[in-house]
Amino acid sequence: MAHAVPNDDRPGGRLLRLILESLEKDKAEDVVPIALSGKSEMADYMVIASGRSSRQVIAMSDKLSERLKAETGRSCRVEGKANGDWVLLDCGDVVVHIFRPEVREFYQLEKMWLPANVTTASV
Image (tube, rainbow, N blue to C red; front, side):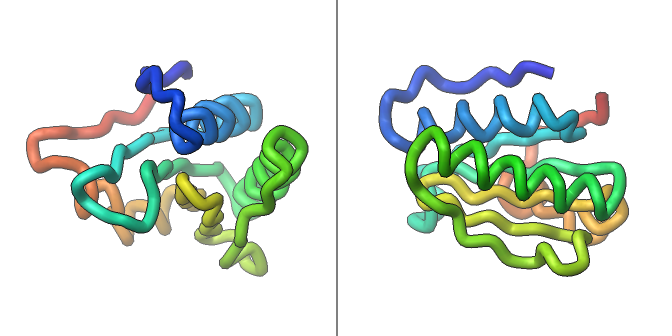
């Protein structure tokens, strides 16, 4: 599923586009990009996505790290890959969370970061 990505020429916007393309190639589900400007100084964007299994979550995080290294020359810091329930990739201007669906439902990060009037839908 293609996502509306702001035409942002800053490094965070380009990085966001690369991340969304990678997740789409790997068949990530329920991908939600969130702009963090005005909400947090930690990054320009956050991306939340799901994989159907621990194996897919780990594989998506590996491929994303490889693709970003090849495209940008930068490495992401990765946490949580050992068990594959929730992998966090800190890519500098963009932070990526890849969950198994039931873990994502438990933590509900979207509710913490999206405006109250925005809802997400499964595709």
